[in-house]
Image (tube, rainbow, N blue to C red; front, side):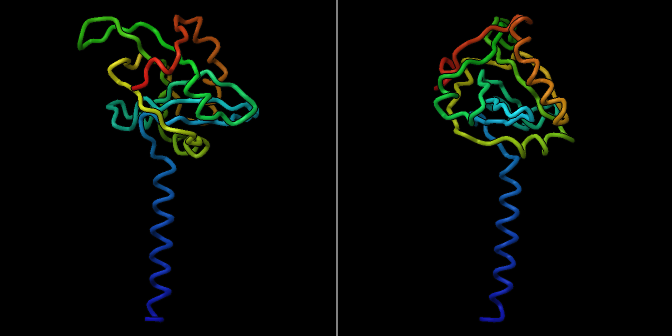
Length: 168
């Protein structure tokens, strides 16, 4: 038994390291994530899409209007605002509210995901919104450039809406 103990420790270590590596880049719809930019500011995002998208994006993030020198709290997300616009839903041929979404792609997804911190998970009601367009990033540099453009999104026809309107 004592001879097998080091082997058992080895297998448990591999199992733990593997599960840690997988969970770092696995996000679920409704995850509230914070990102600390190189400027020192924190930004907030809610996951509205996961890697099941056909376009190859690893994740779709909707910015929550949070820019702070402190890590956002779950209350910051629940009381936060998001960018929306009216989008024609092809399946219903009706205008619906759509979130602005940042789609993240490889090769930079892993680097960006490593800097995202899960703060909370909220139950989004996907019958109340669709993806309304947005932009994409495949590197950390592109992602930070998109953060700097958030104030310009309002000028592109997006309006602010309370995130709590889209919760279950």
